[in-house]
Image (cartoon, rainbow, N blue to C red):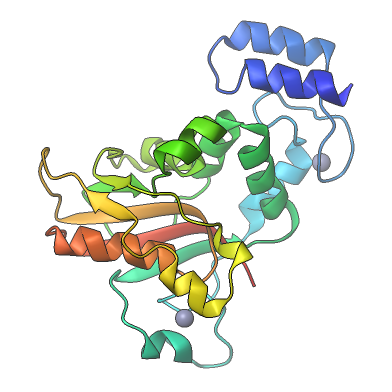
Length: 248
Ligand SMILES: [Zn+2]
Ligand SMILES: [Zn+2]
């Protein structure tokens, strides 16, 4: 049964061919990866609406403006390690911790290739503290990674947010020239070095004044920081970053 569900989602990764997808959904309902019950919703399938709605209950917390780590007590601003490192983005916003249903949704999006779910996730992310920006810029994948995975989850999350918040998305401004190792496989110092020199800005369509970078998961903030560095050196004045989840 699970293989048929996977096949169904591979065939209908986005909301295109809606009626056909609806028909397949009717024949082969998915089991929610969080609670194990049959999904009761076509739009957030394979999740059920009860588990999906838990995402809406995630409230903003006091976080480091440099890496998104939770700050304890009365501490405002940045954590000690961010105060010691040079940061190129203005503020990073984080929606929630990389745990529970949020982790399962991000994992499902990435490894089952569900861009429609990524877009849906992006629509949840209207966040009151985010300042007005000229455009949303998804953190790009390298050509090799994009060919392998078939889609960039950050782009689809950005599309959802763009639609909901009414901010245009600019997917051509930032490119990734070479592949980097996943940050989760590296030690502290390696994580800082890993994304160096991997990104480039394409200036042919002009440089916006302010951008909101979008990524799915933030580990140390090194990738977002490198993106912000190249954007600022290309002339972008304000770079804000928004990650869906932060690892502990
Ligand atoms: Zn569920
Ligand atoms: Zn920090």
